[in-house]
Image 1 (cartoon, helix red, strand yellow):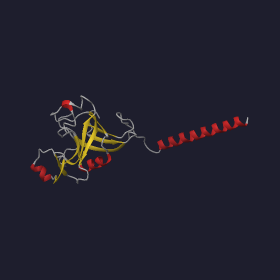
Image 2 (cartoon, rainbow, N blue to C red):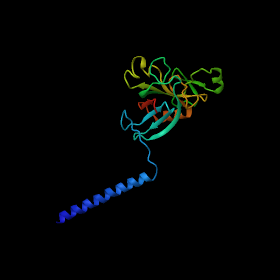
Image 3 (cartoon, rainbow, N blue to C red):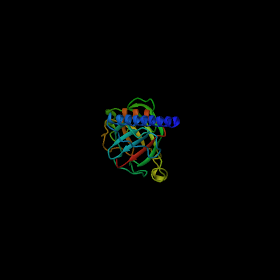
Amino acid sequence: MRSLGAILIACLALTCHAAGDTAWMLQAQTDGPLQTTHPNARHYGAPWIWVGVKSQTLRLLDGWGLTQKEYTVSTAKNGVGETTGSYQTPRGWHTVCDKIGDGAAENTIIFRRQVTPWKYTPELHAQYPNKDWILTRILWLCGQEARRNQGGNVDSYDRAIYIHGAGDHVPWGQPSSLGCVRMKNHDVIELFDAAPNGIDVWIDENS
């Protein structure tokens, strides 16, 4: 009888502890609004980057799928597409496979993937208004989906599709690039520092 009583007391204690945990979780949820989570569909539990073409946004999400940062960007003026020479932004899953420009000052011009001593200025842009300025940082994208954005004439890496900094002349929130994802210079520095090589990037034309 003593053993049975001890078991009943232990079970009651566990039930109370579980109830306390549940009450704590419910209280935590009511302390503030719940955030919608978007876990990484490619590698569950890993942080990732979500580029929305429709919304012209880029979001950095953590391993839980919670948005850590959201930025206004500019994707391709010609819309979405994967073919070489189309000057369109490719869709689907990518990886950041190279990062260029670590430590460079804002508005540093990167030419042929080399950091130069030159700086972008509005005056310089006025002299070369059609120049596609690549500034400050590059996150170079590799496609993850064979025959969609990887290999042949649809290879994002061979097309030199970047997330990169761009000048103040860019109409942020509107498509204007030649295929890349343009970001404000201070934003791309922040993303560059937070996003490691190998992070997944999903370019979504419908979000």
